[in-house]
Amino acid sequence: MFENGVWRVAHSRETDASPAAVWRLMSDILNWGRWNAGIAAIAIDGSFAAGTWFTMTPPGEAPLRCRLVEVRDGEGFIDETQVGDLVVVVDHRIVPHGKGARITYALEARGPEAAAIGAAVAADFPDVLASLARLAEEGAA
Image (tube, rainbow, N blue to C red; front, side):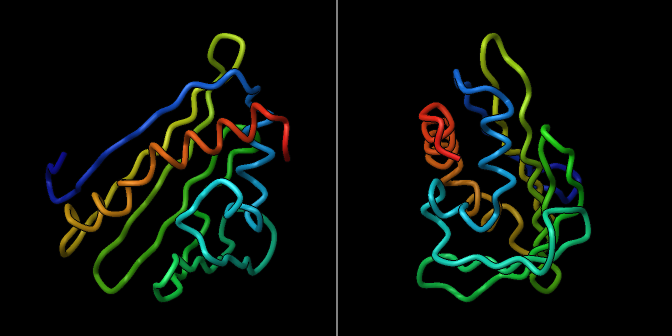
């Protein structure tokens, strides 16, 4: 959805895994590639905390510098990537749901080509969420 210069989309997945199991995987940034095929390499410049920068390299693409804007221990985090005038912000949320959790990735993109870039970035969110949920359900952390 594109409104007031901001393109937005959100994808959610329910899992039988506990919120804590999901959080263990989400907050282990150096191992995101275990459940996110869109990451060929990743490095972080400090701890998993607000203000920390990290570099994520998608397969076959140039590295992207990203910043953790907000980290809510056990509940999720927000990261931001800026390329020129384009800004992409993704809110990764974990909410208790029944015996497990609901995981949501909510993306906002602003700037040139926001709709096209936002759609491309979010295209794999359903697969990423499914892989994350499956790994959390298997108890791998």
